Length: 342
Length: 276
Image (cartoon, rainbow over all chains, first blue to last red; front, side, top):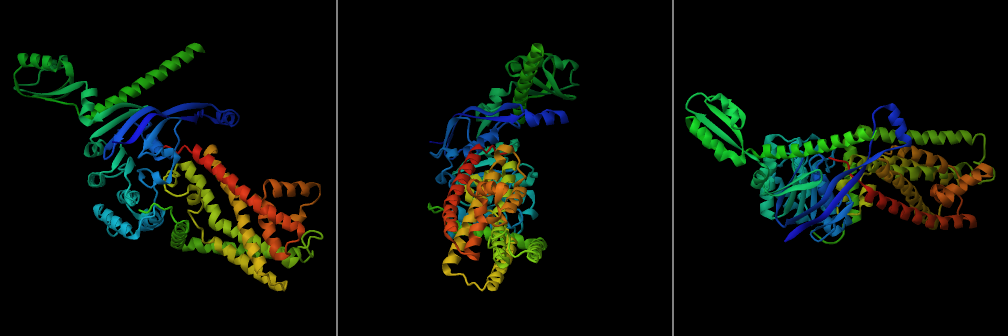
């Protein structure tokens, strides 16, 4: 059953278009030019209870804006959304009691105080009974290995410890839906791994619904079965991780181990990725793998051969790059048209 | 987790406690703020002592003689102290929360956002002003040989609360404009200008310049009521004219609070949050 339902959700910002220089700044005092930024465009999405969904996309793609819309922090320009039966931007107390928002780049704990003081405030705001509060806090502290740090001012904690404390604050009231916006940003590998392990364990144990945005593919691979790729405010893909390669990975990687030196004319068969003679790696169109392999086998002596899918990160980077390329091409086209008009 | 709404008193108590713990972390800063408040009071009293060497009252036939005026001054200090303790740091922070996009966390909490924003921080050093104001009031009442009745004291508390309500409304409206303006750093300046006007008895606003000012700042932006009515209650008691003003003060407070609530709501609806 869908716990989150989004239909035709859009968010457009009007942004002041500031020009360079002092004269332009003075002109801007009297006459300002604004442009519309379509952060989210006509998004449709359904998320079932207990799903762990990743939102992937380049900077400015609309991931965080979508999470903010679903948290009720901002109002949409058009469209509808329902989370647990509530309209998020109506900000009903019943809704706000049942979800949590964690933002890797923002801090909700009191900076100069130990985290436990902020937790007590949360206890009062969320009306958590004392026994339940103590039990949940103990569990979370143990799972996140935070013993001995509760009494330390937040400003004296490491970034990783601080993020763990933010997670504790977000989970004290046992939310049914959790929105995570880049929770591992800036963390070292060990801290990232710890946070990932905790989130996986907590989600499986409680069966809560989580929507995660992250730039780290490792987060996504470790945690989510379902991935939503969003670029320029539009959903480009919604499905499994492996499905991304099927849909967007237009090539495969052939690793060829020759009995003698790697031949010099390999580039005729595809794009040469790497040569460490007698081994060579070739990038070949998915549709012509069998044909290329047949030609190479008939022409050269091979000791070993393997056919691999391209790395997921590479495929996603290509998807983002192609969108950026289209965007730049569109901007260039508009510029050319403007120049022609002038 | 209980389904009942949070106890606002308990939340306020935790916020005040957390603020106290934080203030005590920086005791040097706290002490300097307390000393500054006491220095300010000493300066104010000394300045008016100097004036009363050459005048018997503030304004001709206004009835604001030396110790009555010191009661007015004490009321100003008490209201200023309460504003500095509760309202001003939060309003200034509200502006910054909007600018930096950190209002997000306040918006997702299951509690009235205006309440949380308005009382998030309690600046305990503001109590130094309140303490100084109370001391000056007692000193002045002793000199006037006036023991206020229970009714007068109750009315004083009611009208100090009304004054706070009016000033709070103005400050929160101004802070809310940060949503549309992107940045609003004029809050403390604005506060200074307002208190400059409301810091004197309204009887001195007479004549071609004074009358319009008195009317504007009584009926349009009712900041004169904030200090004048409670000070009148304690220093002179309420005559017929003052009673009418006091009744108007109650309605003005309610109207100001309602308008500020409306503007705050508009600001929250227009909030864009900063990109992360």
